[in-house]
Length: 615
Image 1 (tube, rainbow, N blue to C red):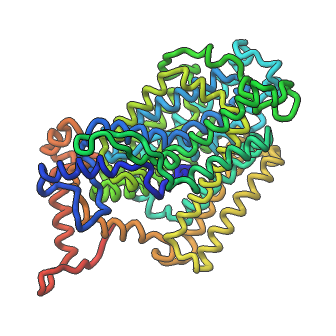
Image 2: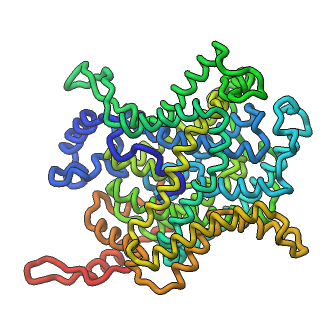
Image 3: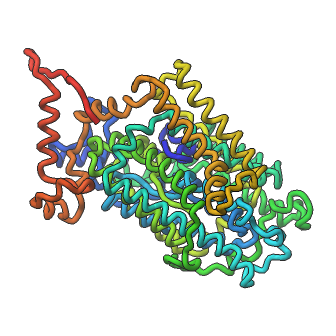
């Protein structure tokens, strides 16, 4: 449900862990009585719940799987952002951006799982902030100088070039940090519950879809650098993720019961994007060493060569530790803050849906208000950290990793914690970032074609909970999304149309009206809340019904959402805690049980009937 998060091939098993999981589940079932997740009568229940800890080798394998699942989405953000920052010809700085975003994503994952919503949910960069960032950087005052587009004129170590890109990054950092304060406030104050009453599928669908649709120009520029290589990259990813996803690769395995044997590894489902990139990269390398691709930068196809980006791997450090302020002191742009704020509001709405989906798949009860408030607040802190460290982006929950929980039937948050440690480690290996910064441009174009298309479709999929036979809903969605394509296109062609006499106000208006997702999201929000329609017609009842359906079919209690290290126990005796929106308190569970009892009236046969449900 998140922007750009529904990425490829997650509706089937990614790898065959049946032997390991079943063996360990049987062992655990013999040791545990009432809390076992294994139930013969319901095979859809997770084998490992939120608080369970799988064996170390299964933990490690699944953690790497989650890292690879998020890999494509996280990697693409700094590579796209480098265009707006005038860094097309500075691969070494691109590699540092890649290291930084993986490092911060790992830190935010650790914070979210430990102190946030406390569900096994991975954090990473968000396309919801990429779109307004690119719009801001395309404004006339931030447009890259012409000489930065010519590789022969760029000296990456010159003070003039460093000033060009760092000034843009500093403004972007400051805008993200200020905008993130809104998310921190909305989360920790408990306002998110109030806002979600008005933000429904008809607001989220056009907003998310337009994130993918608005990036067509960036994808097209990279595709056009060599259509043949781009088409090959696209075809390979489609082949691996769609046609070969059920084809297993036999690999040697060993366990105590079966000794040495072969096991099935669904590699094409596990890493289709990475495999597609690697194979295309290898083809480009072979075409480069045999001089099939032109060596003249002015000729078509030169950007497909693997030696275009010079000696960046040799120049990169083996180890690097990103730190706050590494690009200089952040500055603030009012227009940038307004644009980024629109993206943060979209990200918050998506994350709430992810929390409920993650709780269902991991065998936890529906997240209580204090956990949702804390999760959104910690995501705001993550955006603040991302801005301070200089990723040029924020952080959000990754839906494809939530889907992976349903695939593996392992909902342990220990696995996600380990995945967060992996991302932090990868962010400290400078050579890794340098290697990925040298991916040939047309190979990236092929990947973007797939990813942005899936992002657009993921947005439209939010409409499945609405009544799309309703002419009201068809009008709201169609008008919102088409207007959001027309207006920004016209504004970009006529940037001087608004001239109020106040430069800052002109910048704010231009950025907001040039951001497709803001125009579409605002129109969807306004029309959906003003045109008469029932809650069921608008799709607002689905989450409430899901909450009610799952409340009696969970493997854990609400204690899984308690704060760690005994913090909840220490605070539970304090009467003032009940007034803190993000803290669990002792009387909360009692009230919850009383509400459930009052909502269910006993029948003569001993069963109950639900009278009503209030979210």
